[in-house]
Length: 402
Image 1: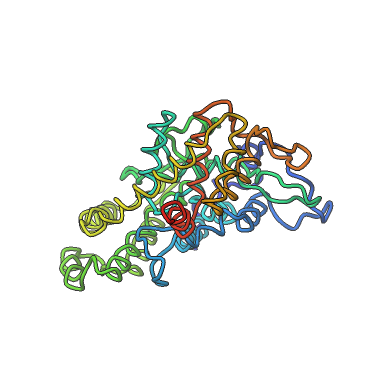
Image 2: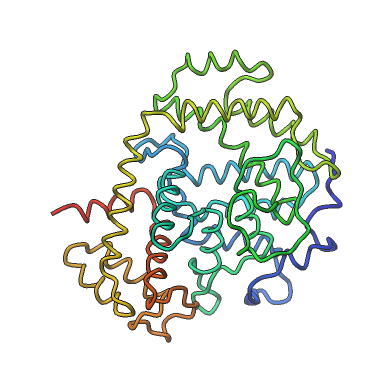
């Protein structure tokens, strides 16, 4: 096996090592003393897979909203596919597989319910209410930095506090690859500077690997799901198959072909890159998926449904705004909306400067200033982004039922 990127691996001795393993604050000491069993990146991995935001990915849409079909890809299956593909690439090239594993399982932790359709709806709400676009990459960093909590060895809830390299991999994974190749950036920058996909390259080669694995992972899987959902027929796929000369159009062939081509053609000098033939094939598949799947008229009714649902939940909660006394108003809603009122009041109390906040109970930082209506609107969007498909439908049905 050719380890041609071994000298670039994010391991101790790499010039970026100390920056890559840096955290916002010191992580509490492990209970096993001076003989740690896990590396910095492995600690990130285990922190993520034990948090609630990761668990909820199993009930979030990848592309198709299909809560009753067990064979349609969900967000957590997609995350697992990205982990598998990135592990293969990183292992072959000689990069740090513990880092790719940690980035891969975390990269979509900030994704909204209802997939990219839900993300676009939340972005419309966010722009309208407080002048910012919603991006699941930025939201992922926001979640691991500010909103997702784990109990430490003393039983105190604290933020995940992940390494810079993993947090950078979350926000840097968005966007399509360039035919000219993917290389990491050299600059150690504040992740707040990211405002759009592809604005900056990831900081590590491992982050670049996950970004490309993310692009490889969904092409064939979405074709399989589209067939299962009756958006595509065997004839549609067979006709497209005949137009692609170098591979068969199925998930295994697409992943194997693109992964192998990337490993073969990537060099430290030129970056992570596909051959022209493979890149063109990938773009043909992507174009086919957009035309036949993502923009298919048959999914428009669900988009309209999601739009009504998410806006109704937002307005129901926004109407209860009353500064630092907002939570008291929300709790009064329990008579009509017991699930939504109980859960949102509890969540908001934990992360805001509510008049009801008990500082002896919460040790995490305050995220929202309830004296600011825009901050409150942001809190609603953040809360909705963490919901699963099933939960957000349940909440909506609670609102519209009598």
